[in-house]
Image (cartoon, rainbow, N blue to C red):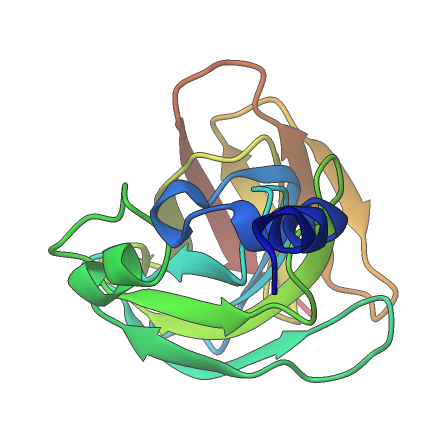
Length: 205
């Protein structure tokens, strides 16, 4: 094969010319829904919608927050409904697999994308996981408290069935979800994480 033919092939497949170390882990159009599970369990389900936009990327890396115990993970391709392959990797492994900015002390869910991110293109994902974190979700007296800094722009918190909103420190919409649970929805307008504190109490029959 001549050098000119090799160049032509690389130009026809632009992502093939992107070095793994340069792929990065850029994201866009993020939305997270936190569903508070049984009071006293310290567990909450996270439904995270995100678009991977780093050209040439073969993986997307979702961090597991320190202090939180993750379980019940799955990843869906919203375009097809297909389940995507993933595994939990260390920060050092994430760096080797195409995310040079990964924190070496953090674990990540490494999602195998259904196709490399094309130039000026994107790949949409839905990551579903459950965290157990007693510092973030706890009881205080007769109230439940969800106390967590949220770094992305669009968020929703769903209270357990049978609970009403008692207090929220961030300007929010209060809605009722399709199944009757109370949902608090807000947009974080600033560059810093929103120091959210939501308090709920059981509805009196």
